[in-house]
Image 1 (cartoon, rainbow, N blue to C red):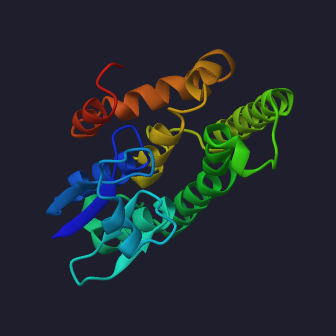
Image 2 (image 1 turned 180 degrees about the vertical axis):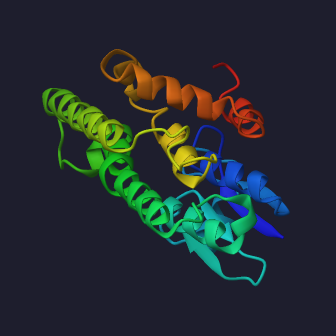
Image 3 (image 1 turned 90 degrees about the vertical axis):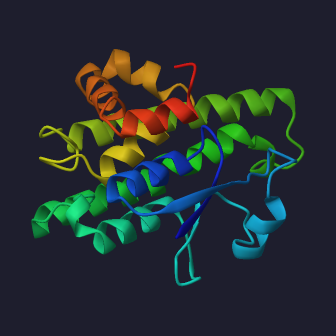
Length: 210
């Protein structure tokens, strides 16, 4: 059985959805740095960075980093079609996963914890840092939307790992509202992804009010 360390509304939603699509048995351990009553010590023991999602594999090994976890699941469960079977399409899906991990995900950490990136930050510096980070983040999503067209999904004919990560990470920092105005077709694709069963059930658990 897999053990997924995560928390509601976090990036673990993408991995949880991938496990559901794979049909793999798993259990969830609620753990995050912002939930003091969660299993933080257990998470720290397997991931010193205390980041989620963290996935403990059935053999006891541990995977961190959302893109790496999703690529592993895609390769390990080919029948789930988390990654395209076509070699070139698979390469583009992996490129998209790394794009989000490298260009979109890090900005969320700055938005959530600006004091980690600017020593002795005051209110004025905080506001400028957050404004600039959101502008950069939203611009990076515009580039992504222009380069990764849905056909009918971002992963191709079948909903896959790239769709899951894009749908989750775009939930944060005002990205969806921005894309609804600037890239309405891409916004509709994200909505279609999160409404796809069994992904919809996972999203309902993570974002019950949306």
